[in-house]
Image (cartoon, rainbow, N blue to C red; front, side):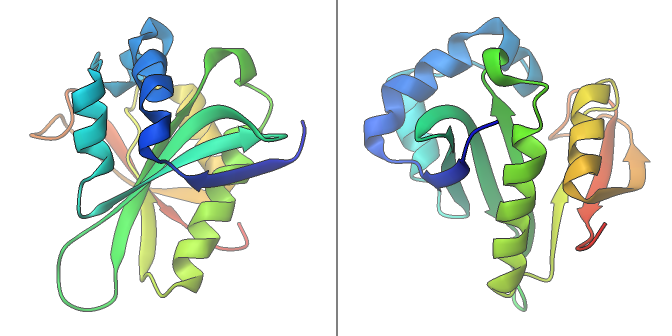
Length: 157
Protein backbone atom coordinates (compact mmCIF):
# COMPACT_ATOMS: atom_id res chain seq x y z
CA UNK A 1 0.00 0.00 0.00
CA UNK A 2 1.33 3.40 -0.98
CA UNK A 3 0.85 6.82 0.54
CA UNK A 4 -2.86 7.31 1.22
CA UNK A 5 -4.72 10.60 1.27
CA UNK A 6 -8.00 12.19 0.31
CA UNK A 7 -8.83 15.54 -1.23
CA UNK A 8 -11.98 17.51 -1.96
CA UNK A 9 -13.69 16.36 -5.14
CA UNK A 10 -14.02 19.08 -7.78
CA UNK A 11 -15.90 19.53 -11.02
CA UNK A 12 -12.74 18.26 -12.76
CA UNK A 13 -13.52 14.86 -11.18
CA UNK A 14 -16.96 14.57 -12.81
CA UNK A 15 -15.84 12.27 -15.69
CA UNK A 16 -13.93 10.07 -13.25
CA UNK A 17 -16.93 9.74 -10.91
CA UNK A 18 -19.34 9.05 -13.81
CA UNK A 19 -17.03 6.27 -14.98
CA UNK A 20 -16.62 4.77 -11.54
CA UNK A 21 -20.37 4.70 -10.89
CA UNK A 22 -20.96 3.09 -14.30
CA UNK A 23 -18.94 0.05 -13.18
CA UNK A 24 -21.38 -2.65 -11.97
CA UNK A 25 -18.85 -3.57 -9.25
CA UNK A 26 -19.32 -0.06 -7.83
CA UNK A 27 -22.98 0.66 -8.57
CA UNK A 28 -24.21 -2.55 -6.94
CA UNK A 29 -23.11 -1.13 -3.59
CA UNK A 30 -24.93 2.15 -4.33
CA UNK A 31 -28.37 0.64 -4.95
CA UNK A 32 -27.53 0.09 -8.61
CA UNK A 33 -27.39 3.84 -9.26
CA UNK A 34 -25.34 5.28 -12.07
CA UNK A 35 -25.03 8.98 -12.75
CA UNK A 36 -24.79 11.27 -15.74
CA UNK A 37 -22.29 14.13 -15.70
CA UNK A 38 -25.12 16.50 -14.69
CA UNK A 39 -26.13 14.09 -11.93
CA UNK A 40 -22.60 13.99 -10.54
CA UNK A 41 -22.31 17.79 -10.71
CA UNK A 42 -25.57 18.07 -8.76
CA UNK A 43 -24.29 15.61 -6.17
CA UNK A 44 -21.05 17.58 -5.76
CA UNK A 45 -23.06 20.75 -5.09
CA UNK A 46 -25.21 19.35 -2.25
CA UNK A 47 -25.25 21.62 0.81
CA UNK A 48 -24.94 19.02 3.57
CA UNK A 49 -22.44 16.70 1.85
CA UNK A 50 -18.71 17.01 1.25
CA UNK A 51 -17.28 14.81 -1.50
CA UNK A 52 -13.72 13.45 -1.35
CA UNK A 53 -11.45 11.60 -3.76
CA UNK A 54 -9.34 8.87 -2.15
CA UNK A 55 -5.80 8.72 -3.52
CA UNK A 56 -2.95 6.24 -3.31
CA UNK A 57 0.40 7.78 -4.23
CA UNK A 58 -1.51 10.68 -5.80
CA UNK A 59 -3.65 8.45 -8.04
CA UNK A 60 -7.46 8.48 -7.59
CA UNK A 61 -8.66 5.09 -6.33
CA UNK A 62 -11.96 5.80 -4.60
CA UNK A 63 -14.61 8.11 -3.28
CA UNK A 64 -15.76 9.18 0.17
CA UNK A 65 -18.51 11.53 1.19
CA UNK A 66 -19.23 13.03 4.57
CA UNK A 67 -22.77 14.18 5.23
CA UNK A 68 -24.32 15.79 8.23
CA UNK A 69 -27.71 16.27 9.79
CA UNK A 70 -28.98 19.79 9.37
CA UNK A 71 -29.94 20.41 12.98
CA UNK A 72 -28.85 22.81 15.68
CA UNK A 73 -26.01 21.90 17.99
CA UNK A 74 -22.80 19.99 17.33
CA UNK A 75 -22.54 18.59 13.83
CA UNK A 76 -23.19 14.89 13.53
CA UNK A 77 -23.53 12.62 10.56
CA UNK A 78 -21.78 9.92 8.63
CA UNK A 79 -19.57 8.85 5.79
CA UNK A 80 -20.05 6.60 2.77
CA UNK A 81 -17.54 5.46 0.23
CA UNK A 82 -16.17 2.98 -2.25
CA UNK A 83 -12.91 1.95 -3.84
CA UNK A 84 -12.37 0.97 -7.45
CA UNK A 85 -12.36 -2.84 -7.67
CA UNK A 86 -8.65 -3.11 -8.57
CA UNK A 87 -7.50 -1.77 -5.17
CA UNK A 88 -9.98 -3.45 -2.83
CA UNK A 89 -8.84 -5.78 -0.06
CA UNK A 90 -5.60 -3.94 0.71
CA UNK A 91 -6.73 -1.89 3.73
CA UNK A 92 -7.02 1.41 1.88
CA UNK A 93 -10.59 2.28 2.86
CA UNK A 94 -10.21 1.50 6.58
CA UNK A 95 -7.10 3.69 6.73
CA UNK A 96 -8.60 6.64 4.85
CA UNK A 97 -11.99 6.35 6.57
CA UNK A 98 -10.26 6.54 9.95
CA UNK A 99 -8.34 9.63 8.76
CA UNK A 100 -11.57 11.34 7.69
CA UNK A 101 -13.51 10.32 10.82
CA UNK A 102 -10.71 11.69 13.03
CA UNK A 103 -10.71 14.95 11.06
CA UNK A 104 -14.47 15.34 11.45
CA UNK A 105 -14.28 14.76 15.20
CA UNK A 106 -11.36 17.21 15.43
CA UNK A 107 -13.58 19.74 13.64
CA UNK A 108 -16.15 19.35 16.41
CA UNK A 109 -18.51 16.69 15.11
CA UNK A 110 -20.40 14.95 17.92
CA UNK A 111 -20.18 11.57 16.16
CA UNK A 112 -19.56 9.89 12.80
CA UNK A 113 -21.53 6.88 11.57
CA UNK A 114 -21.69 4.49 8.61
CA UNK A 115 -24.69 2.45 7.46
CA UNK A 116 -23.60 -0.53 5.34
CA UNK A 117 -26.10 -3.08 4.11
CA UNK A 118 -26.24 -6.16 6.32
CA UNK A 119 -25.41 -8.37 3.31
CA UNK A 120 -22.20 -6.45 2.63
CA UNK A 121 -19.93 -8.33 5.01
CA UNK A 122 -16.77 -7.00 3.35
CA UNK A 123 -17.84 -3.40 4.05
CA UNK A 124 -18.82 -4.24 7.63
CA UNK A 125 -15.38 -5.79 8.23
CA UNK A 126 -13.67 -2.80 6.61
CA UNK A 127 -15.60 -0.25 8.64
CA UNK A 128 -14.82 -2.27 11.80
CA UNK A 129 -11.10 -2.17 10.92
CA UNK A 130 -11.45 1.62 10.59
CA UNK A 131 -12.82 1.81 14.15
CA UNK A 132 -16.58 1.75 13.58
CA UNK A 133 -18.56 -0.36 16.05
CA UNK A 134 -21.98 -1.85 15.38
CA UNK A 135 -24.74 -0.12 17.32
CA UNK A 136 -27.89 -1.60 15.81
CA UNK A 137 -29.44 -3.39 12.84
CA UNK A 138 -32.43 -2.06 10.88
CA UNK A 139 -34.87 -3.19 8.20
CA UNK A 140 -35.10 -1.51 4.79
CA UNK A 141 -36.52 2.03 4.93
CA UNK A 142 -36.83 5.16 2.79
CA UNK A 143 -33.03 5.48 2.46
CA UNK A 144 -32.00 1.80 2.37
CA UNK A 145 -33.28 -0.82 -0.07
CA UNK A 146 -32.44 -3.71 2.27
CA UNK A 147 -31.53 -4.43 5.89
CA UNK A 148 -28.68 -2.26 7.15
CA UNK A 149 -26.31 -1.89 10.08
CA UNK A 150 -25.68 1.35 11.99
CA UNK A 151 -22.04 1.65 13.06
CA UNK A 152 -20.48 4.52 15.02
CA UNK A 153 -16.83 5.56 14.95
CA UNK A 154 -15.06 4.97 18.24
CA UNK A 155 -11.61 6.60 18.44
CA UNK A 156 -8.95 4.20 19.60
CA UNK A 157 -10.83 1.06 18.60
